[in-house]
Amino acid sequence: MRTQLSNFSRLAFALVFLLMASPGLFAQSSDQKTNLQIYGSALQYKGDITGDDGFSDLEWGGGISLNRYLSPSFDAGLHLTYGSTEDKGEGTYSGSSFDAQMGTVMLGLRLKMYGTILKEDAFIGPYLQVAGGGAWAKTDANAPAGGPAVHNDDKFFTMAGRAGAGIRFRFSDAVSAFVETNYMIMGQDKIDGYDVGDNDQFLMHNVGLGFSLGKAKDTDMDGVPDRRDDCPDTPTGVQVDKNGCPVDTDGDGVPDYQDECPSEAGVANLNGCPDRDGDGIADKNDQCPDEAGTAATNGCPDADNDGVADANDNCPDTPAGVQVGADGCPVDSDGDGVPDNEDACPNSAGTAATKGCPELDEATLKLIDEKVRFEFDKARVQDAYKQLLDSVIVALQKYPDHVLLIKGHADFIGSEEYNQALSERRAEAVKEYLIQQGVQNPDRLVTKGYGETQPLVKVNERLSRRRTETARRINRRVGFELNTPDLQLNME
Image (cartoon, rainbow, N blue to C red):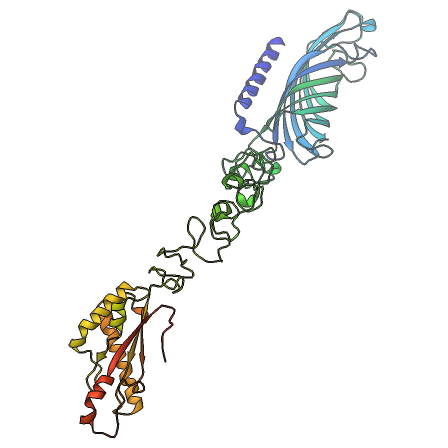
């Protein structure tokens, strides 16, 4: 008997070692619904020999159970046990004794308190169970002469059943322990060798380990089964809590893997970083974390919104939209003391009286007063005047912010409509020459035709063409006006 128990023990320990070395096989029973239990047993016999004195001393054995999850309330199980029992009679049975080995195979049903009254993963889980099946026994009995009838060295199979209660102790999704006690009754009264009274009865006390087999479904592979995972779509590799959700150390609602400030409670729109002054700039990037500011000034106040913090702004009341320098004051490109936003000539130094534009020097005034003459009924620039126009280009380079008005005129020969068009063509011809010669910023060249309305010399139109030719040649001209770019030009 001891040899058989020793072999059974070695098998049980080998199975325990194999299962514990393969944690990938374990899961919650409601996920992968099979559970294997390996346990040691203690049997207490009660029968003819013990009479009404109760149960005998403990005798040892062991067993294996394979359980299948049916519902939160019920498990089904296949139970295999092997053990021994022995006793010595007293009174009527004084001098008698037996030594028996016994194995059982039963199918059982377990009513669980965990999964219904308690949570399925509660540490303590009480249960009730019933089982029925068959038993095999081998007994070696002896009795004094003249005693009741006894069967010596008997082997037999019989029906058996048991009912009991236990408590499961859950250590993890994979491993649990349990203790239970079952009341078992045999279908025959032959374990003790005597077949003269009630059927033999036993108390079976089991203590062992349970291993849930299989792998729980874990869609996001975070180690928390989907059944308990409140965040089943967590990205791979993200550290999670016991509920399967990403860890949020500072409790600000932004998980650590997305939180740029995981140890300080912050706000979601700043990736979990705090913002004490509520200006939308995280404190870690805010040079003035206790005063609301702007992104352009790294979180510092900027009353005029010019991009320069008030602490560095020498002109804190700059109008909106005005370009400013590093000191917060309007830019003065030409350094004439008139800011660009008020300077009609921001690229040429002038005075406040002239809106920042330079006054024309005497040579330029004299040049601009020159005229380009044209042949009768022609709008072609004659070679004799090209040197004059080249000098105009030089003047325009000297005054890059000024606008040049090119004014075309005609004599009185022809209709007013024709002369108007002719004067416009003459002004355009001069403009085209200046552009061809590379004048800067051609958009500042403005043309206007005046027809015959502004003669320099008054002509008696009743005289012949020959007699008025000299006066009419003076009137066939293009004149100029150079002024500031705000178009304060004499367009009349």
